[in-house]
Image (cartoon, rainbow, N blue to C red; front, top):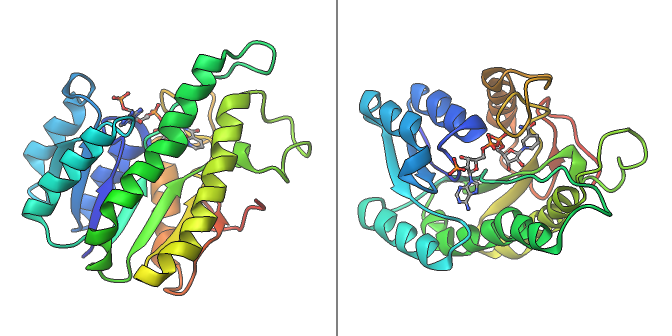
Length: 233
Ligand SMILES: NC(=O)c1ccc[n+]([C@@H]2O[C@H](COP(=O)([O-])OP(=O)(O)OC[C@H]3O[C@@H](n4cnc5c(N)ncnc54)[C@H](OP(=O)(O)O)[C@@H]3O)[C@@H](O)[C@H]2O)c1
């Protein structure tokens, strides 16, 4: 049994992780941006005694601090954090606005930074503590040019930056005993992925959680696919 914190748990991959991880007997701390979009999560909480919900907007330092503070009043440690909250704009170069670019960085990169820095003290008290950042193959600089995927320039850049943040966390947080890895869930049928995507959300989550279960406790600073394969940065 692990104690696991998830951001962006109101829908999509975050909500499905809450479902599967709590079904497996873990204690899940599910965070959501706003009650307005968290109906399904709050409903799930009624059925699962080991699922706890907190409001946390990764775009706001105050919201992150206040949520982690409330979480720390109830829990003494956390073993695993999924930085899952994310947003996408499909606009290519030439069309994307600076405002959208900034907003995507604020959520996908700075949001991960805010949550991770704030949760360090709870993680240090956890067992084999690990941060998993939900990245994307669209953030791989090496894969760019080898496939037709892409065009969502701000999102791509944000996930490349997230990858760098993950790598640096894996180095700097090692002194706290915390590891950090990036995972791409594949192309998933969520509001973000759309209906044409390869995986049902339950399928993707089931796949990558199985890979995470198999990870050696020493693995750190890598970028993995939903199938456990290494993805080039
Ligand atoms: N779907 C894919 O094909 C795919 C592929 C590669 C990577 N990913 C990554 O996987 C993660 C989850 O994606 P998804 O497909 O589940 O997306 P989604 O269905 O659009 O859900 C996004 C989640 O993030 C939350 N969120 C957005 N901004 C937030 C904020 N400021 N604070 C807190 N929560 C916030 C949303 O909350 P609200 O309900 O309040 O908006 C929602 O719960 C993302 O990081 C995404 O980049 C997805």
